[in-house]
Length: 213
Image (cartoon, rainbow, N blue to C red; front, side, top):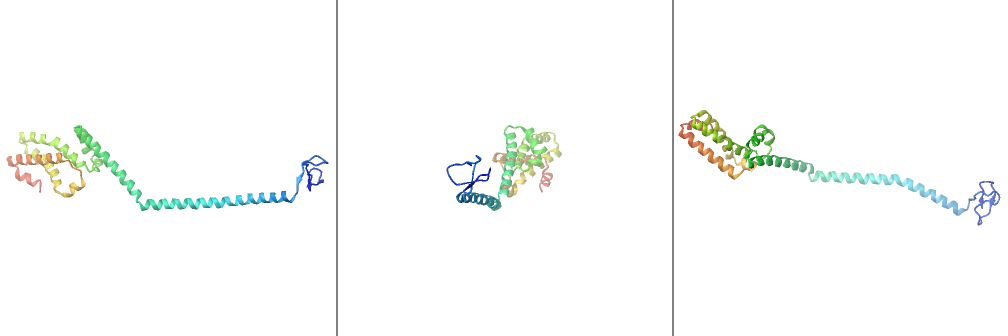
């Protein structure tokens, strides 16, 4: 039986979808139709209830993944490794700056790195290598000028600079920490020996060895 929403007349189930009395569309009150409506409502309610549960599951899984990632980061010491990589990159850049200036024989630029910006370039393990190279370029000619002028004070000053630089190499730790160049090291040893001979000839042996105590 279907009920007309227009006139309220009951119309037996049949092939017509409209009230034969007033022409309005009929309402299906059959048990089958009613049960289907109920099932549709229950499905909608079930889907609505499942949404918070799904969201909760997503949140839990997300938190677990984040926890596992954090644990992995800590276990692998990733922050420290990133910091070490950044530090190595910075040191490589500083060394590259000095190396380029040295190879181009741009002594003014090298002096800027070694003297004016020494606080920065000291972070490079190659600092003392290139500082020695700059010393070897700068001081031997000045030493020779002082020798010709019999300027003992200037000779002693320059000798002290070169000898202190050379004596740094007597500590084995130096070679394990700082970078070196075989050619520069040999040139430094040769220059200190040359100046030592000249100082001895000039009778400055006592003053010379006082500087190296």
